[in-house]
Every structure is written in structure tokens, then in C-alpha cells.
Length: 119
Image 1: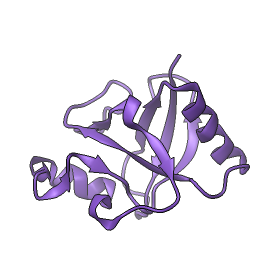
Image 2 (image 1 turned 60 degrees about the vertical axis):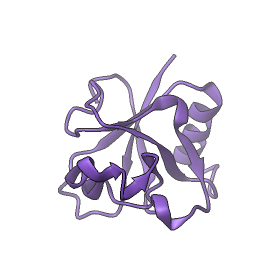
Image 3 (image 1 turned 180 degrees about the horizontal axis):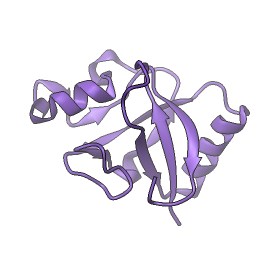
Image 4 (image 1 turned 30 degrees about the vertical axis):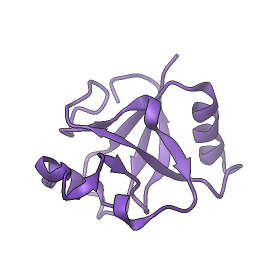
């Protein structure tokens, strides 16, 4: 069973929401604990970028590979980038930018659960 969550990073509010799809029940539970306020430490999103649109994330040219998504408290700078930066530099992702397509935006956070794929 899948669950979908909107995430944000530090932006001016003009960007469309970025949606992640989660399959692992433990990761879904973790995301829900973040939203409820029960989880306060490992709250930032990380995962592997797939350079294609996803039906649940239609405003972006990429999405995160669901099995690779996890939450973290501390990470290295090499995987930090804003959602807008990834979109604007997608051709370089996996090369000079974000080696291995690994993305861990430091300011990322779950802001809501989306009840259907039509996020």
C-alpha cells in the first residue's frame, strides 16, 4: 500500500508542492509521526532522484524512487540542494551535481499527507 506526502524546502512559497510516494510501512509510519509532532529528530527527506515525471508529482520533471526514501537528522553537504535547483539543473544531476542522484535537501520537511495520487 502506498502513501503520498507533500514536502517543502525553504522557498518563497511560489513553487508547486513536491510529492513523495512511500511504500514501506515503517517509513510511512515515520512520516506520520513527523506530521503528528511525535518525531522531532529525523525529519528531513533523502532519496534517489529519478529523472522522469511521476503521476503523483506532475509539476516536476523528477521524483524520488520510493524504496530509497528515508528520513534523517544529520547528513553531508554533497547531497544538499533545493527542489528548484534540482529541477533547473536536472541534466547535471548524478554528474557534477548530486553524485549518484542522491538528494538530501537540508531544509526539507513533510508538510501534509495527500489522500490520493492526484496530489
